[in-house]
Image 1 (cartoon, rainbow, N blue to C red):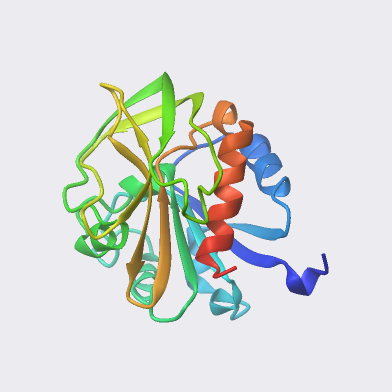
Image 2 (cartoon, helix red, strand yellow):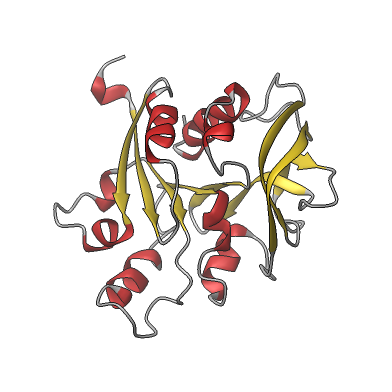
Length: 218
């Protein structure tokens, strides 16, 4: 596949540690996708004027301060940049702990489709991921699978979301994969994806790759 035909994905990180080599290996395994990892400050400052150039923006950050409420110098440009999300057809992928970002910001709650994002978390849980909609492009033809991952106890996505993946576990939220529309954008939210155990799982990689393609309209 030529470079021009590949999906260009900004992968925005910050305010949460993660296994960088394992995460990078997962991104590099995704066929047809060029991933551009960058810290939130780089994304919002957009020195090269490329923020709108990406086909999809994947958030893997966990900033807790509501943008624009003081703090670091980049708070105001962060607010301005993030509030443009959904104004174009650029896709949005909210991955794992990015679901927890900006906990008091209604804008982010609306983006992910969960009004109350108060949560608990548990490391290293054995879960069975069930395919709720096997006809959807992201999950088409997939079977249920088991994996080890960090789980969140949080309110489920609302009725205005398309539920794709669920988990029936006392230490996990029910919906772990869902899509929705936010303004003019396709949004995919995936609760899975804490560490190498998840990054290396073939089903996780499949869902991430398909999710990025779906968000990009491919």
